[in-house]
Length: 277
Image (tube, rainbow, N blue to C red):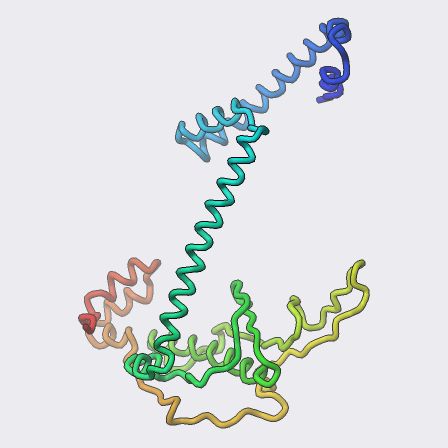
């Protein structure tokens, strides 16, 4: 639909509008007709997506409202920013408080030695900080001298987690089809691939390519220090599904073919022991 006639309302004076009144009325009628035809086609889809009458009433109310552009609008923006800053400060204070509480127990080794999972971890620490985690891609910041140790830790932790889950499902050997990190990128900038030069119209100098270490070379050119076996003791845990297999084969099969977590939990629940106090 041609909307050039609409501009006449802002360009012509009163006499000009009166002179083209019939043509403008035809334009307004045509626009109403087109709007009505579009509305008849879209409105049924809207009712299918938002069947509640409140949704339609809210849109109708918003369409009839005039957006404030006076000082009240500025006050509204200021109030929204103040509320956002207040909530952000509350979140920041809460995180700082939790961090301070954790630091208070930093030297209390009994805190994690009493936990069967935490006491199997290496608490020597590395200068590493997580910066990003999206789906199958995570990024850590580490010192130059710790980059190979960090890469090895990521690979081991990745396989270890999957191996523990498989073992608890009654699979003692990690299946080769189980996905894991194919490689670890050792880079000094944040980019998608280590071989991207990142040349742009505003940055003509290419970034030096980095390295991608797979399992065979993740230890680095000089290798890694041997692990202290006393600090990395392994404690065997009975797989969750062993109790199902020993008690009755039927619940074990039902657990294997469960379609969701709710059904699985209902099968496993009678065979779980009472939680330790």
